[in-house]
Length: 114
Length: 114
Image 1: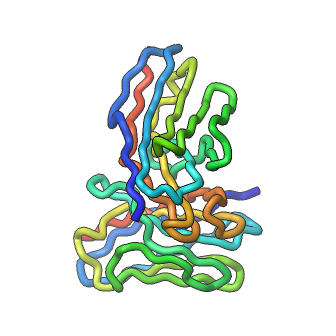
Image 2: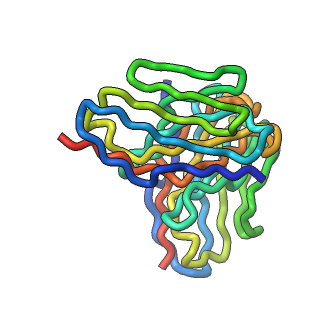
Image 3: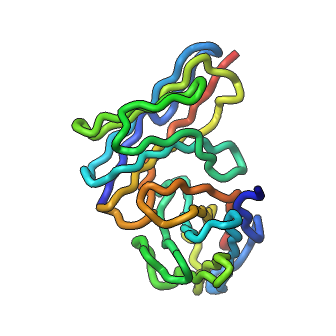
């Protein structure tokens, strides 16, 4: 089955700096890669996603890149703000896993310091 | 449009009991997936329902079961509760059940087994 690895597990940045979180996946059949943000006491919130026919996608301060050859994808947050502090999860799904099943990475605790 | 709702938000049970959790998907969404989140194992896929049929199942024992009703609402049941079942149970809905369909999560039900 699919396996998703996520690094780093914790990330501390100064306000205004950029943050990068990286994930690798094992199943070459995976074709959908969402990123979720989870705040304390809440469910994961989708922040951006990318499909395998696209190499990069951007939404304001957030961007995701996908390298299908190397089987890795990354989340980039620019001009970080204190409200960006949360746990971020990458995930993958595709024909190999079947249906809508998402396989998640282990999460990155992002702390944006003033 | 209202988001995914889950009830109850918190539950405390004792070992050996059974529990039923409920999920109402976003209006118009026909697919519901369930995930278990624990500090040790992270986010793990339980099962997925589409049009009242279980389409996919994760690697959990038969004590975990679910169903979906004609209005797309879903319930999951855990019988003979064990201490290790303590977790945040998350429900996610999507419009269809394709591998690239975006899943939106509810706030979760926090289950504590004593």
